[in-house]
Image 1 (tube, rainbow, N blue to C red):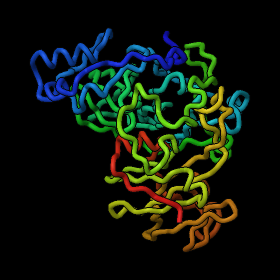
Image 2: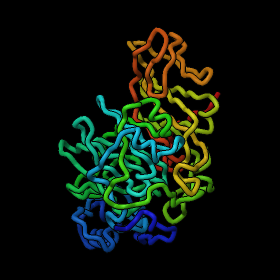
Image 3: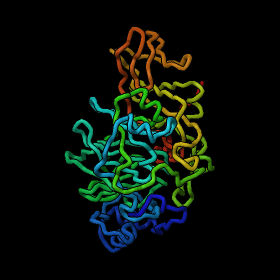
Image 4: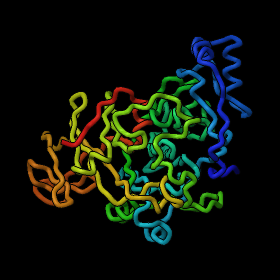
Length: 384
């Protein structure tokens, strides 16, 4: 097995001209063959490289080969009490709630695997994390009516993980969920709402949740961060990102990123001042909550030891045909219409609306450079 720690900062980059991308998009010929050779590298692929939606020169090697960063395909889980013996209070975990089941996926494990193929309440899911873009995203594992599982290609585009499905070996952009190379070119995966929060918050909100076990079959010493100091740099690693960075915010600022037909983003640096941001996209009113207490996974030598960068959650603001407006008062999320109090999971815990739940909206906590790269021209929110 090639450990994720073997991904050093000395990476091989494919040198493929944009002209090849145009030839590949139109299909056929020797140019298509050269694109296939360049993209495949030394790996064996069944991918249809004649079908490609992006300039192939944008897809570069991240170091490891195909599946060199191994996905977790038979995940095991343990109780919150058992996980409490090795998880630290501020360390980040992805929390996914489907039906009556709630599971937590610690970033200390995903740092080394990047993909977990799982099933919750009968629903196939694909839990993903790209540390270079800070994209913790969950997808529906049903693709065109067929259950699909995913692995790592070993490639990056705009510094973001390029995945592949094992059924067709189509290549997918993790940040956008779009198929960019192969048979399913142009298909977009369905995002599932999930929050990246601290272990302490996850256990408080969901006492009966189960946690991805360190018993993965790889014997890794989970917890180390191979990207020490990454998110305090001025920008992403140059070999993997060559676009002009949108200068509305610093490149490595974290943002709450929402795509409801149009892109919208609120930087943590602004949202932390108010705790709440509200917006409306194409007639859909929503709110973003922010809470402190979550460690950066790519700051200190350990995933749990990073500085506090906080967490976000996003919800539809409509409840029982009424659109609510929110504020943060004395550390609580309160709607102005009924003065009900809501927790970070979108549940009304006191007041007239006790027992109601806000509908979660899929979102990400991307680094700004990554969100702006895949959603250029996105609308931004600033604290009043």
